[in-house]
Length: 234
Image (tube, rainbow, N blue to C red; front, side, top):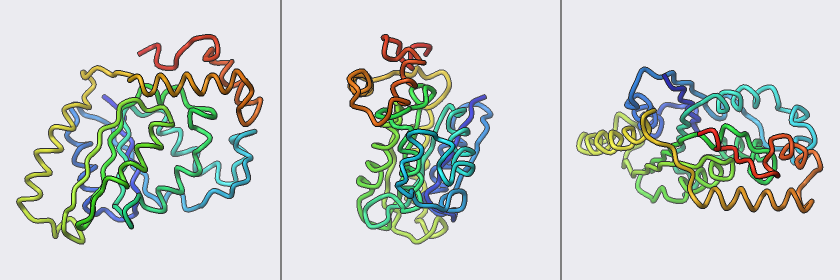
């Protein structure tokens, strides 16, 4: 059994949510699905206080954030859903990623992130979903997630019930294909882009071009400055 964590960039269960949940349910095996909704589960903006760089628990919203980050840490698969709002990801989801910037490769990434698969789902009424998906994809990549699937579609409806039958059939087929690629039996790979970026961030840490000596110590403790890679145990 795998753990699937859904991060939903809206409180309501609209078209985007339903497609994301469809993918989660289709992944082979009887998996555990854990869901978070924004802004319901983290209704704050980053204060720019920078305290998390020195001490992650110093974040004013640490307790709420920790519940979500811990679930992500333990997950095998992340599914991130966001409606396309003004061509980009929703503001509440953006706030969540702002509040977790300290988990990027340039700071103190979680080792587990380099062993996860993820899916980004976005819908729109009629506009392109590419920019919204790219917003989320960039954040996941810089957190270290090496394998990210994407699914965007213009549903031409205000809610899931209003989506045309033919369009739902199309979504059904396409989500089947995505889910098949996320099963536990599918081999995980870490691409050259992730490897390169991780190496670049390691050079920054070695040369003292980082934000804090605490970050360098974090990398040293994990052996990352001595050649060890977080995906090594895969």
